Image (cartoon, rainbow, N blue to C red; front, side, top):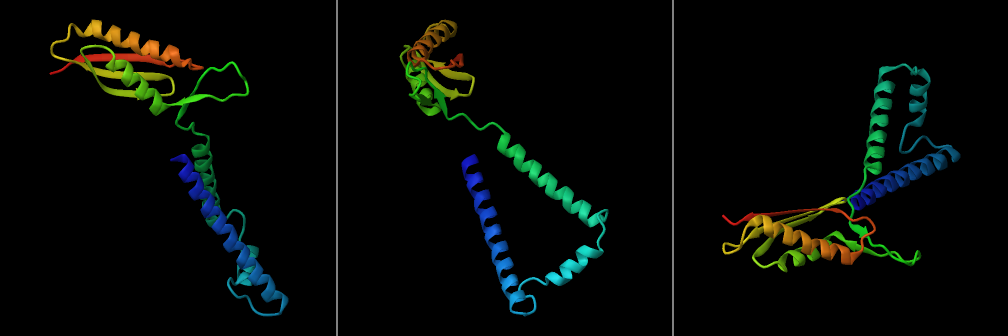
Length: 177
């Protein structure tokens, strides 16, 4: 999402700069050949700027709106993006190895399916936490024992992946209603 918004903003800024450049080029050429302003009546704009004081309310409101827009863009850019890949420990410092959140979720689903009597319901992989939700089948023993088995199976899968920073594992096995 962030990449799409960044690209859209870049296109908008680029188009605005191109349009401004075209206007400036056309007006400079018109002034060089002695013609009147073509696209923008800049002599009137210059006269308005000369007679307008810095403490004018129109300038204050415009400045405030521009400052708020810029602040909004800064907050949007510095907001941490969603983690798509979790880094894996590697002995080679020149090697960048990672597992995607989707791949990790599929691995946790497989770990849940390894436990008899349990059906995975949902696996949610976050930056610092993995939540595994599962349901116990009707013929399954108590849910507390199954929760420990699923947690052990998922923990084994996590250990095999050797993530650089292991997320906290949360397992919840509920009885099927």
